[in-house]
Length: 112
Image (cartoon, rainbow, N blue to C red; front, top):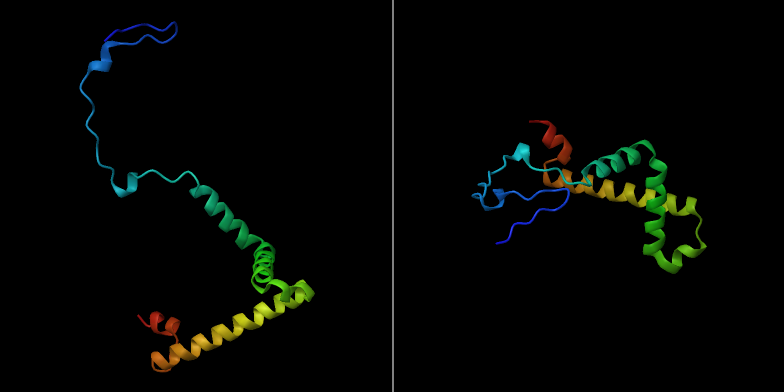
């Protein structure tokens, strides 16, 4: 093996040293994903500015409804989504009360 020196960075014979043994990382030392801070920032912004969440919900609803949504205003779509969400929550609460003896899942979990 030839050892050459570069003008600014001399290469030492340390290349031939024994390799360093890898150490296991504990869970507290595991590297943080590089996009993790951005995800928390996105969540913070969504909580601070719920208008964006509503706009995204309207856009998603328009995509799902397709041609049906062409004649509806944003307010009408928002109203439809709100009514469906209320119905879904009501039905889910009724189902949970049937399953858990007259209590919702939240009520059962808070009893602990």
